[in-house]
Image 1 (cartoon, helix red, strand yellow):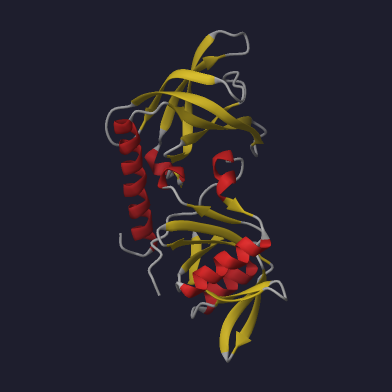
Image 2 (spheres, helix red, strand yellow):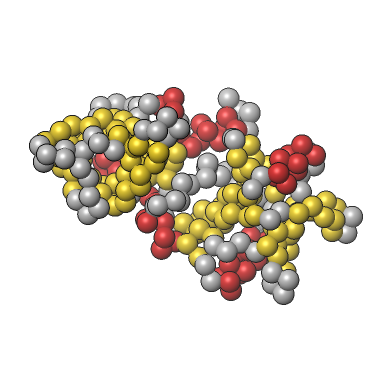
Length: 258
């Protein structure tokens, strides 16, 4: 089987950039799963908590509405998979990233071999362009973006927001809810993104989505999705280089290479 060399799962909640790459039609999903079988694609099935197991699609039973996945030779990995509320499966098909959730997992046998049975996924993400990959920024990188916005009194303020994911199309940040007034469609000019390698990047950012999140201590913060506005090619290349090197380091660490 081919080595999937898969990055960590993409954060899809509230990410409207990924919507047009999401398949929801049953026939499309069945065909894509069949393609994964034919190309013998290895799949990294993430169970949560940084844990995952390697699997593959063995069979698609459209009549019964289920998919059959290979089980792990590690009994503990299988127990984690069965106990997880869902598996987030990530693989590569001819250089295209494929990601889909699987829930309702059950253990079974197929010609004497251990397998998993699960209902067909209801959606599959198929990314054909690398610039739309989203990397969850490791906490150790401490990446921030200085946002220039207005406060509730419409005065100019600067907010140092933590970057939680980054892609070739934009970033997502966490910021206190009362720090600034941001609206979907608004453009924040003259922001400054601090990558771990080199000088900060000056850029304009368009607000694409806003989600309010209440923390355990009761504090309210915003998760704000931001799209790059007119990103220069050298800057785009630098961001992609950061994503590539970080993904490679995370994959090597997950495989025990670091």
